[in-house]
Length: 317
Ligand code: ATP
Ligand code: MG
Ligand code: FE
Image (cartoon, protein in one colour):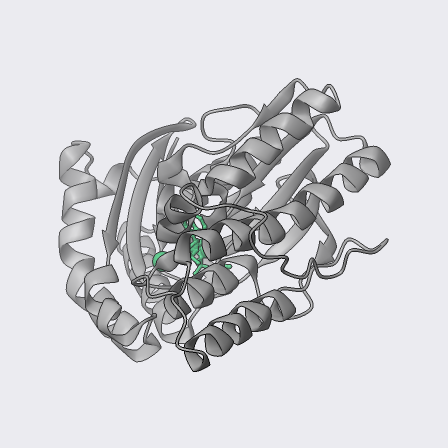
């Protein structure tokens, strides 16, 4: 059974083909270079650039796998959430291919896709406790099947990835700043600054706007006093505050929900500290099925959508 999947919710246009659960290809066209001068993704530009990438990405996905489009059994795509213009383009491409080959369409959820990205190289044993950390989401989910996702906690304001990107920008790192900030943090002292750890309470919810504001205020004050900005120490102290709360909330969720699998998903799952926290929590609580996604499957990609489609079809038989 072959599924062709399309992911276009933000600034990546990606196509993957999966055959009986095996990823044959995962072509990702990224637009980072075109958005870098704006310091972030410009929605209108993202949609227009998708148009330029559609043909070569489809051709590359089919050619590199020697696939005839008629042999595809299902066409999956990211229906929501995301940038509306970007999503419409993915949907149009999916509808066009599906109607051309007369095969069913599968509209899927981007975040559920991120979670199944973690299952590409490892098998989920249910229930799964998934920490979703991405550009637009920060949530703890309990997954009982590919059709059963429960959000037990979420951010009340900014997402962790958004916070990383904003903080990176104020300390002078280029978009997307998250990975660069992660790298810089390794050179600094995490106890140099004491940033607020928000929503450190009984709930499973998160809040990142206070942390973001604290860093912006610090930079502002240092600038006013004409003092040098100790960027590495700020990065390290920020990374500590941003990730410590993830560890605290996850530990509590593990105790309550007793998952058989512990994993993490979304762009920020590429973060070195987050990856370390997940592995250590798995060891501490004796969850042998604990894993982090392969780097390629952390940020937006169509393989994760393909895998979600495959798992849904597998249990519908
Ligand atoms: P969503 O999935 O919520 O709709 P999105 O698709 O825009 O949002 P993703 O592609 O899942 O976001 O993730 C992108 C985010 O991941 C960016 O904010 C980026 O800075 C962040 N990111 C990637 N690598 C790292 C890292 N090593 N450390 C911190 N953040 C990172
Ligand atoms: Mg992106
Ligand atoms: Fe995403």
